[in-house]
Image (cartoon, rainbow, N blue to C red; front, top):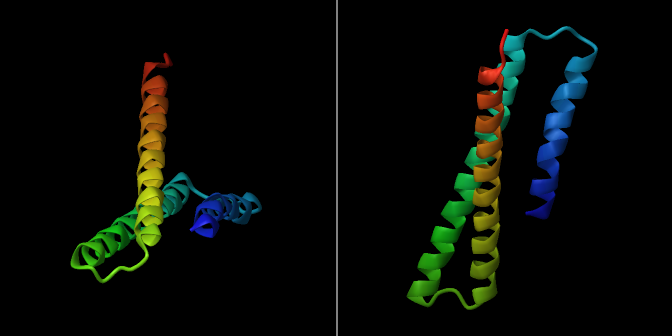
Length: 102
């Protein structure tokens, strides 16, 4: 999972580097950024699904290693906290742009 977390900024950097030489329209950049966010949220959803599956296995007594459940749960929790903080920063930036006088 640590590899996946560290790879997310590399994906965003790759999008920027790929488009650095060529002129890219705002719509294309917006679509790429939207796809990046959708992938990140899908990854968060997959983490939560994994935690739910492990939790069900634990309740049924099928999971012998509780540490797997705790680690997956903590990863999911941290991912959700990161998502909320990113959302808050985006909203704050949007509000700051809206307050600018033209």
